[in-house]
Image (cartoon, rainbow, N blue to C red; front, side):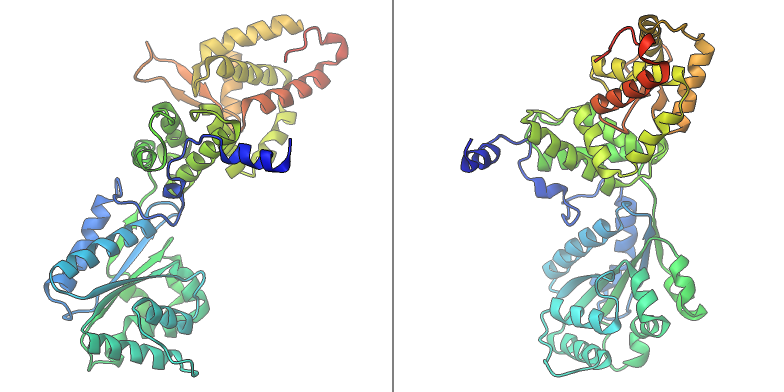
Length: 416
């Protein structure tokens, strides 16, 4: 096949995506499921910007782990409050600065100036002079601004306590100006604030909004909202979203990271496209999870440490999942498959209590996930799933280890 034909065959292949960029980290969604409380708190704290503009200069701290919606909430709030202010005749700007990139006071004030549309002379001005010019510009243009310093930890570490104090106490230094500048500070936790002097730290902690890790149900709602934006209809089944949500949900042992859950969905979609598949499947999610988790090599290495019958049980899990094409299967089905494998290899199967212990040990090693059956199942049972690897290569790896473990002379049936 000619090079051009190869390229064209890929480009012309149908895709499950209608708007892939809606899954990118920088995308700001129209709505934020399960962050209504934090948005209300932001609105309450910045109410004066709309009701009595210029009366106070507000500072608010957003804190929470990665992927808990801090940045998205700040951007959505900024977008909506600017629109609301302008509908009421108030000229309000929203500025978002990532302090991982702009870590110095000079870099921050220069970025503020550019984002509010102010021209900064090329001659060497100090950070203090640029900031003074910003205040003058806002006064002349009768503008107000909410400035978000995202990843604020880096600014504290690089710029130091004096720079932080200079920003948050702006109107102590420039008391002649109307209070037009307001701040949102975003940090993963409050530990970084301990580098500041006591007075500055206390001042920043005065208005704090916490963002907690998402549960699996909350992540499902978030993924569902992105599905309608990013994918064609009927290309992403509900069970795929539920599976991803349960992998990442805090209540299921995950980190509650929405960013990671959305990335898993994105990579699963790319895996489906690479195969020319019309729909995303559970197996595509497994492939995506591996791609996003380099520690899979460590998990693979753990296979070598397993006892023979733990390997046989894990092989039974893989084969039962492959046959069902579901995210989870009952432990009873797995146990039946385990007995069959033992028979094929001439091994005596262990009793149920021992098999259950194998399952619990594999769960502790993060090689399988377990949960209790709920809605959609008759009676209560232990359900078993695997997200740590695609099933085909995992099965091959397990088979190789079993073959070496029992020796060629006992390898009666080659399972492929």
